[in-house]
Amino acid sequence: MHYYSLDTDCNKKTVIYIFVLSLLLNTPVNCLFNKLYNFIKQYFDFLSGTFSEFNLLGISINQISVFGIFGIIYFLYSHWFWKIKIFQKLHKIPNLNGTWEGCLNSTYKNTTINMKMEIKQTCDKISFKSIFENSNSYSKMASIHINENEGVVIQFAYHNNTKEFKLKAKEYIGYNKLVYKDDTLCGPYFTNRENGTQGIIILKRNQSAQKEQVQVQPNSLSV
Image (spheres, rainbow, N blue to C red):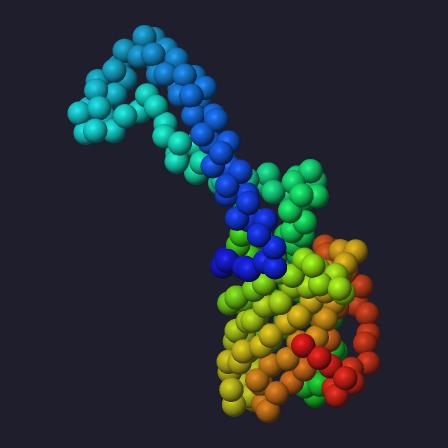
């Protein structure tokens, strides 16, 4: 997974909010942590020696720093909490996690190709893996534009390794611009493959993917 950029500062604000929350939780968390520490020392004598060894090494295990609390909260938020509806209404970052199925209509040999895309995402990292019959492609960088007039726009560059033996170039790079709406990703792509190819991608999340056909007009495509 790699970081992706946003056209909002919601992630910066999230870092500030979590840090303030960590400051507020520092005293009660350490109070609770000390009680747990004393309870373990009292009822589990065999651990006292281990605790003493940690203290001799300068490692305090009866308290946790503000940055430690921040790290725990941020990890939980970035992997799970950000997906909760109440948070999504605030930051408006779409949750794209899942398997997407559909088709790619390409100017390459004027073909329609079935494809699958696996997306893994946290609040600040993402990866796109596109799966075709003869090749897979992997995203290298991405951006999500929440405030575009056409809706939420996802853009990413990718690298593809093809298994087609007849092709001279076994690797190529490309770029996708997909609009996210109603659990559908749709938009143009282009590559540097054999003097350049382009087309339209249509994907639906999960097994509800519909293999829609699109007539591609190469001169009308824009990225």
